[in-house]
Amino acid sequence: MFAPDKLYFLMEDTLKKMPPLWLSLIPIVVLVGLLAVAVRIFGSDTLGGASQIVLIVSTAICVLISTTCCGRRWKELEQAIINNITGVATALLILLMIGALSGIWMVSGIIPTLIYYGLKIINPDYYLATTCIICAIVSVITGSSWTTVATIGIALSGIGMAQGFSPGWIGGAIISGAYFGDKISPLSDTTILASAVTETPLFVHIRYMMITTIPSVTIALVIYTVAGFSLETTLTDEVGAFSERLAGTFTISPWLLIVPCVMIAFIIKKAPSLITLFISCFLACIFALIFQGDLLQKIAGEGIEGIEAQFKGLMISVYGNTGIETGNATLNDLVSTRGMAGMMNTIWLIICAMCFGGVMTGSGMLGSIVAHIIKLMGNRVGMVASTVFSGIFFNICTGDQYLSIILTGDMYKKVYTKKGYESRLLSRTTEDSVTVTSPLVPWNTCGMTQATVLGIPTLTYLPFSFFNLISPLTTIVVAILGFNIKRLKHSDYET
Image (cartoon, rainbow, N blue to C red; front, side, top):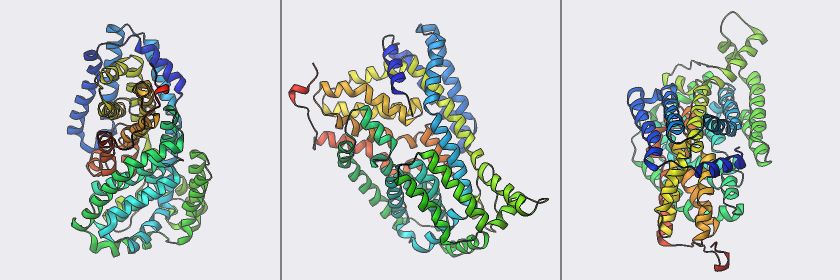
């Protein structure tokens, strides 16, 4: 992921020349103001280019202030941008593979098969709670919210659409479950990173998180259960029609479920993410040739037949747009895919967000803002609340959860030690504030990715992502109650 040594060096260097707070806030105010205008004008199409331009303009303003008012050299800011973009290089490759995976899993019939059987099993009254639980289980097993959303999440989204739930409720339940697992799984890179940055043993960190995580997910599940019984769905009568259309368009077979089982096996074996995703795509391509040969020929278009048509259809499914006609307009939207090409706007946005985050870090503006936040800390509650605020703030400013975890953990590590608290309190608070809120920021790597994969705008699912919204509040409430707060022995305090 990121190279912490480079990041720490940058921060140590820039903190010596921190600009005043009012000057540091100007790029943030510009960013938020322009984004508000862009969202109002472009709506759900904001990620198609408007957000990228806003980030570039905000970056330019930050550079202008840094070079003219703060004595920073362009070379320093450029290096900060390069470090940021280098840090997300792996994430960009994973995004491309997720685009390929979602495309070929749909065309091969894997996701349609999951939807088909899911419609027969999942009761609409329990759909939201069941969706949250299934995504949580898969995410704990895989350790990846991105993989969870791109596979079982898409299938569950299709089931919800067929049962008549609104996109916001569907996306919220999926995101809540996926990030529950991402937060507590020992296979999760964010979990490992948070424990490493704060120097907390991994399983000590995970066990301590249960104190805030279990109440948060329990409250979320209660809300989803109550909502499942009270919401009026409009398409429940069409569930049978959806199943028939799916069976008429794709070859539905339990044999297709071999692919997700193989993927989970590789994840349990702790195979690298890129290798796991590539093998899953490769197997799905083979199954597409076996089970969906006629469909591949339709995707290839007229003027080509036989194995060449199937090969062309296969390639298009992996990298490009596929409009599959099912005879049902809603289902057509559900099964259409964009492959790798569909991830390009997201990748473009991530690069722009990394430019802004890099300049804010390299200029010392981010350090200036956080330094003032730290000054406001008083007792234990103020310290935890400041950490939560900083984590969310970093998610908004840097656009990436990994960088936000590193910044939050590093900024507060000495503060917690000096005040006599074990590192596990910082590691838990960091995850409660950073990991779970990252998909709620439209220009954050997680927010962009999940919105792109699900086809549900970030601001649409945000109000319904109850686990993600409740977790930061729960960690503050636990701090207020003082429940199981671990203190250092007096001899371990820093002076």
